[in-house]
Image (cartoon, rainbow, N blue to C red; front, side):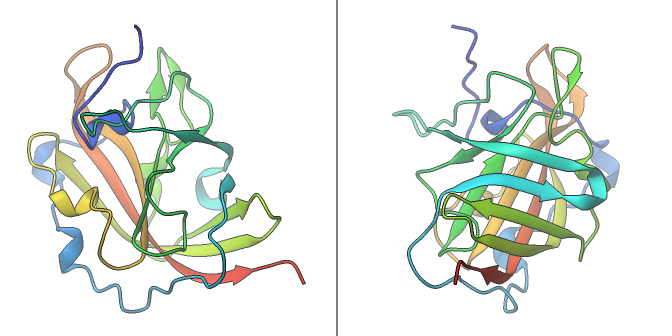
Length: 192
């Protein structure tokens, strides 16, 4: 019963980030996502994420959402969870992935997610061998008590949402804030 259920956004993972004074809180619907594009063809399952700037080269594991619409946090420090009831990165609507900042004293896959800046590159590898290229569009930190519904919405413009925890630890598995990095797709290289 060590799998902890958290509220829709924090439940994605357990992490840490900034103090409330320096947090940006811009709702997703306010972002200019016009340069975002949706990949064509059949949606592919993501299997790996690469973020060169912060030396992430991590396997992606499918994760689930329970009957109460809570996401289930990953049970280990390594890897990234993709919530497969949502879109795949680069296909319609909102793809959501989460990873730990730290897990029982071990740095998680998203330990340095807060170092990303607007325009930094992220790459996804898919089960069919294709690759999707993305750029960071926004980076926001939200109080766990004030997360815009648009962050977890399975609607709206095509985007990919990376989530980790931030702020001060409230307990061994819960933090005061969440870091949300929004990506937009720029190119999909398929197999020819």
